[in-house]
Image 1 (cartoon, rainbow, N blue to C red):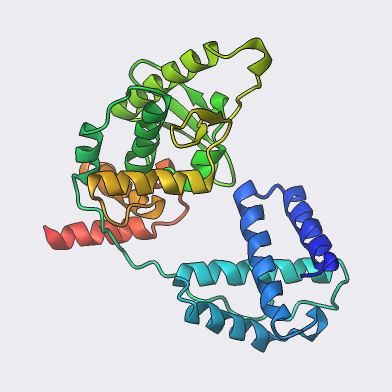
Image 2 (image 1 turned 180 degrees about the vertical axis):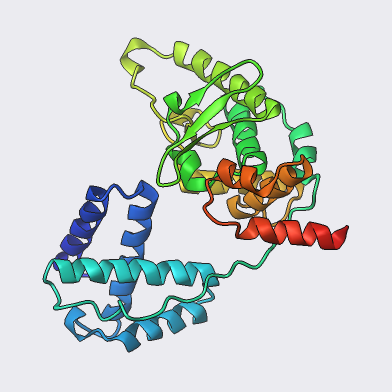
Amino acid sequence: MTPASDDILKRFAANLRAKDRQAATVESYTRDATEFLRYLDTFNMPLKAVEPETLLAFRDHLITAKDRENSVRRKIIGVRQFFRFLAFEKVISDSPFDAMPLPERDESLKIPIIPGQIESALKGMRATNLKSARDIAILRLLAFEGIKAHELIEFQTNDYVHSKDKGSLFVPGVKSRSIYLALETTEAMGVYREYFEGWLATRKPSQQVPFRFLFVSFKGKDGSLVLPKMTRHGLKFLLYELGERFKIPHINTENLRHYAIEHQLANGWDAEQIMQHLGLRRLGNIGKHIARRKQDS
């Protein structure tokens, strides 16, 4: 990587932000472009020498490195966006990748989390401090409300409105929506809010930095340092901890979203209600869940 490459990547990120792309999308596309540039560096290949076959070779490289199919697809999309930007900036004459078809998305239905496992885990969890209250609230949002990772970490404090029986949550972004939360989720969010407000009250005036994001993160072996925003890495580590503690294999945000669909179907929700709650524009995996349930019955 050269200083010129670093400058191009910074301009690419700025261009994405100017288009109001989600912070997670900007980070993801920039990371994909960086990986592709490093791949080109191994062959000393300049940008103007890149051809459609180069992207195919990069795809094969990712597959050989055992990247998952959807991860490969996402990286190819990120690289295509980067080269469109390069063409727009006149760094290259035109993008060599626009006419290339995208790899098919792998939408096979995987439900490795056994029904009832999340409920059992929650029975073993107790809200005794800010972190444990946060963990319970997050797990309920992921496993029963179907909130996605990038949505969860971008929630701000004013996105949640608390009510005794039915809290509501505004989900910002491209698929923005307002949803009502289940009673148990509302209760968990209320407990987290109480611990959060109690913790804020203990801070010295000199420490009164605004905490605008809904979920904080923790640093240090004892979690004593509270940071103002949950990160993707922090969320992954939280789920890893819960998976180890309660012996739940393959627990991640994608599988928890599948778990939420199953939970909502079991509670009598129809496909349209679930699509509205999850911010979906097409049936997708909901239809596969419905078909599988009919087959099982």
